[in-house]
Amino acid sequence: MEYMIRFTQTHETFRLAEIKALAVYEGLELEILSYSPSSPYCFIKLASEDEAIRLVRRSILAKSIYEVWGNGSTYEDLHDNVRGVSQHLWHLYKKCTFKFTIDSFQGSRSITEQRKLIEGFKFLGLEGPIRMKDAEQEFCLSEEWQYDASALGVHQPQSVHLGRFLGGSDRDVIQKYDLKKRKYICTTSMDAELALITANMTLAGPGKLFYDPFVGSGSFPVACAHFGALAFGSDIDGRSIRGKGKTSLHANFVQYGITDQFGDSFVADLTNTPLRVARIFDGIVCDPPYGVREGLKVLGSRDPTKGKEIVYRDGKAHHLEEKYVPPKRPYSFLAMLDDILEFAAQTLVDNGRLSFWMPTANDQDQEIKTPEHPCLEITSVCTQAFNRCKNSNSHDLTADQANFLRLITYRRLPDSEVKEGPAREERAKENGVNADDLNPFRKSYFTGFKAAFR
Image (cartoon, rainbow, N blue to C red; front, side, top):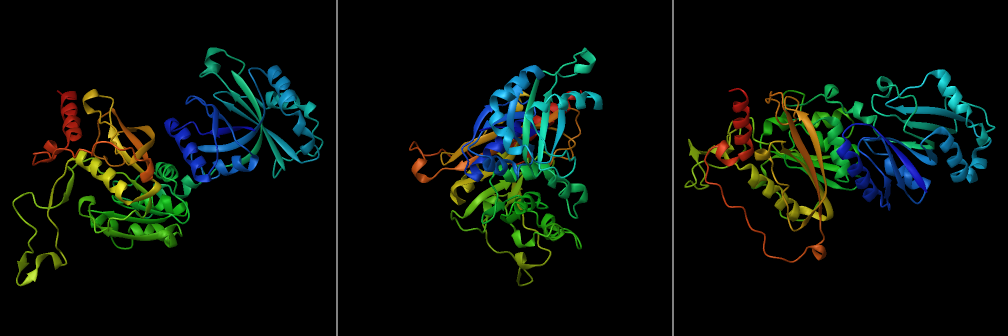
């Protein structure tokens, strides 16, 4: 059967990827019949009405889904198509209470025009009472207009569709998790909508174990917990986890009543993790630091000749003191990407997913290749343009140019699907000792930033 998804007209490069991920999560065979980023209407084929409802019920970027009763370029065409496509269904709803709505994308209709269009479908033979509230059946006329049609003097839509409403999505939950209403956030807190989308891409759900190695204030664990996953997180900066006073990462779980879905959080960095090497995680989600503001760091000494001997002060091990701050050394951004993929390959279960955000740019010298790993299959790459002062990890960036981020999602291949080939080459260790030497993105960013103000 053919169905129509009504998307929100935002985050266009994410919409299809999210729906495909949800089809995998629900175990559905999804066929995309028609989709365009410039249109909110996507036509698909599924086996049943129940599958259609399940597909969108937890979607963030879809609004609703409809059983297609007809399509056309004009209303005359639509009437003919409805008679040919859906006439066998009319008798099923003949006595039901019903209502009609009109969805005009990039266009508008007066009340008089709407009434006239609706009355044009009297031939459906619906005999039940009309109820604008709590109707048993809702039929929607969807119109797609040319952009700026009114200014161009265009009086008719490009295409029209009739659908029977089946179910809505989980989009309203964005308001619940809005950062403006959250008790604890920090400068790296990810936008609630994007965090929820990321959780969907990574297939978060009940009975699954999820981990964020750059947890910050917990935006991703909160989103994963919303969908029922048991969420853990770690961060090199314990202050972001502990917060101040009564506000902390844990306080966010308390606020939303999802403490049962919070596993724990701990202080560590990805290169010095206390976690044992075992394939236990169903999903890994993160927004790694890009190192633009302060430069990336990991635990360790800047002096490579120093070992890991315990330092004593007044007869007490220095690292056991309450105010002890462990030393940190600069860390390469590209090495971090490799480490994330290697960690995921070692800890994800078969078909588990890794989703992480990484920067890109429209300048050729700032482009960073999508990292690859033989045990990980790329399932989607979505691009989001941020104003640099609104970037999740770069609040200090104030240039007028746009900064682009990619959300990359991988699937951990079962060992039987991993292609044999030459051993994965390790990236040569950088010889730099400061943030610019170890982070070409940071260096090229500020080079471009300075050039713009010369």
